[in-house]
Image 1 (cartoon, rainbow, N blue to C red):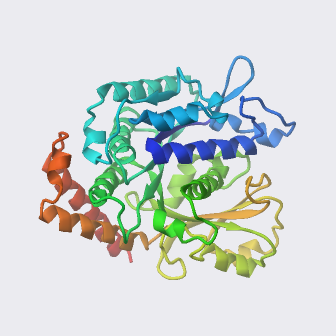
Image 2: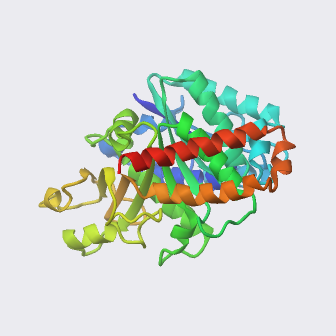
Length: 397
């Protein structure tokens, strides 16, 4: 068994994480009580990658859910699917919000929550026979997902340096921030993703909102969950390319620090292969504002789901690794998930860095973050680190 421990933090991370578990439970034929209800060996073959089996034969997610604000955790606990997460072991709630402040989440005014999460991670690690690594869903916009997420990434790197860490991280619009201190939260969060993460798949809210069939955050969360399900297909089903986390990160991130990935999700109706390739890079299907028709892509993987003819696929996707899984997404009978390491990430980072630098030079809103225990040196290090990352992108163009 090659286990992965899933961690979901903050309101955004928990909403996406819950959708993800709903999605893959359905794909592996597990109901809301953890009972397996199918006869297919395909769904059971690598089920232990994400699920533990209890003594009574039920399957439960290998997941840790945490938030400073208890409202989100309580809503999951009270949902029908919440029965899969034992509240005494898996679900942790703080007593107050981070108020969208990276410093509050990182400097940990709630030390009890930090100890609880760390202990739950250790317990889960001890239950694993052959741990691949960790997977995190969170947002870089607020305080818990970004600040507390950065703290957890630091801890994972310190305590488990030989295990891989992969994140699915949400960004605000690169054009219109929702909160005035978002540039601080995002750049400080990116600083720790650069240093302590092996692979990070990013999602841009503004890009998602522009999709023709999206109108609410529930829609966006479901789309992101479908993409994560598509990407993790390689880990959850047999006979897949990049069949474990290490193979995936090695291929998708040929440059160690340039490990930020963009993705797309394309429903397949009656599209020809040539039209499918165009749709894969269309703005309505991409999760980040990267132009895959232009610029260099260092690595790309195309994951086909459902009953699909394999003829001539290599001819139309010569620059991409391709893999196939007969188990479809719940939303679509046939679909294509693409994930790529594209140079377009550089422009997105430049936008956030410019906003960060403009605010930091004027010391705008610094007091609120430093009051929580954050030092100004952290801002300088984050700014320099992101500048260095952008220089590295430019050096290999």
